[in-house]
Image (cartoon, rainbow, N blue to C red):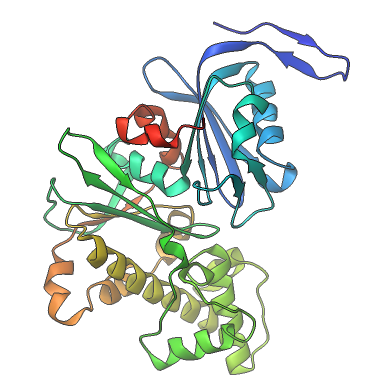
Length: 338
């Protein structure tokens, strides 16, 4: 039922609250919101640039103005650890006090999860046609699933089957593991980056900004002029510029190493899902063959990894779908803001 509205003394529109659920996915670059219908389907999806707002409250208010209503419940995924009192986003300027956000937004209930928890919840929720399989494998339904992918940072999560039939999310910050080199060329790039970074984590390289950082490092090491200003430029140049193409190769190799390590760590025989915004945007420029060569290069465990299905998640609103359909799971109750 549509909400009624009025104008307050600041000239802003007051939106009446209705029973319902809004879902949100806040990354380093964009904030996505959607309204959930009674059947769990998302609609009225809006993508807002984080740089245009001071924080979550302002962006959420803007979305509510757009759709003409406020909901009583919000399920939101954030690119940040969620176990702290103050939520500070790793790759944008936003922060908020977890204890105050529910009352500040006028909510009866607020579910707050990591962004890759939402990506993991999306795995069984989105249509199978949303996936592009890049390595065929034998999927074991009783085994963990790894969900990993670059965006503004590098997200790592997963799902583990539980005895009650639920898939329980694995919550962590695997994007901040220390990145190691497998070749002399990779070592040179990491050594160059260490000149300006106290810690070269995986997401410093396996992310949108990381792709550009690789390109910059290669140019510096070869004493070449930098002819790109962004990761998008590097991607466009990759078909005709040797250094940009080399950056794409290293990006895929580094990614393959980290994905394989995470896969072995959790025993992801249920499959690997590559999520996040970067790989779908790279499209044909994502060097899948290079990624797979490195992923499967694990000595005595190579055959183990070669048997695992790997697929790219291409649904742009996957995290929203995951939250819309699975926010009521028992295993997520601990993420409700008190």
